[in-house]
Length: 331
Image 1 (cartoon, rainbow, N blue to C red):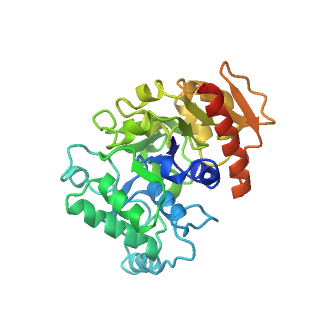
Image 2 (image 1 turned 60 degrees about the vertical axis):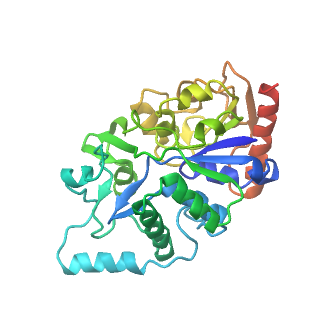
Image 3 (image 1 turned 120 degrees about the horizontal axis):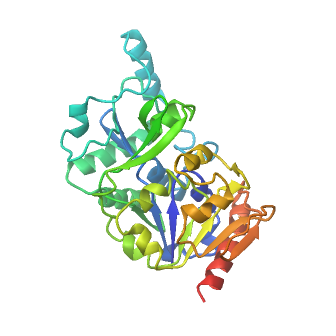
């Protein structure tokens, strides 16, 4: 049995090689939901959806989000209509009252659907409509995710980190904004001051998550701050990791992140933006898998291989190193 913590694109790329080493029936994936937003009334869960589409064999592997070959007619029509109606463009948060409408906590993740700032495909949108409708019927996010996973034929267990709303908010020199606004709309350009996981202190891990953390855990090469950080902010999550075998794969090649804003976000939380910073980000890790050219030294077992993942063969190579690490440190 093994559990992967997944967010962004790093861990999904790694998972392309996991099935050759770890049986899908004995694999659990816990997905980050700190990136979730409500856009135009629809509940969008980007990190969960990447795993759904990957497991269902329909993921757009050029972007590592969305459905391959999807059309974007609704998205384009929304843009055209906003322009014709002289409506504002760009991310538009709903009012403070609407942020808290029906919620115990203002998460600042509710956006207007006018001129969508995220490009959502037409088939992709069907997932969001279905998920939102299931939630409106009283289903939990876990229950909705289970139904969708069944529809895509996933062989692994896919769990959202929490059924409770948690929002990754980025405090910048231009004000506070949701991670999706910071990264998708603003391309990560504002200077980051700090990061907040709003709602995490009162949220709970979703059913089955803490039990899954009793098995060996793999933290893939995802952003330590906004992909894994929201999970670690949940009560009991980090404590559970301290009690089990944890192997972390570096998202850095020395001082350079593979992708995304890991560097500035690590700096914002006072962690060194490099492989070396993983020791502070993951103090509970029992072993690290880093690149063979990376000279970083840890006070814990370190396994080296080429960690660049451009194909399923690359992913298998890294997973083999993970498997070796689990066997060695779990003895």
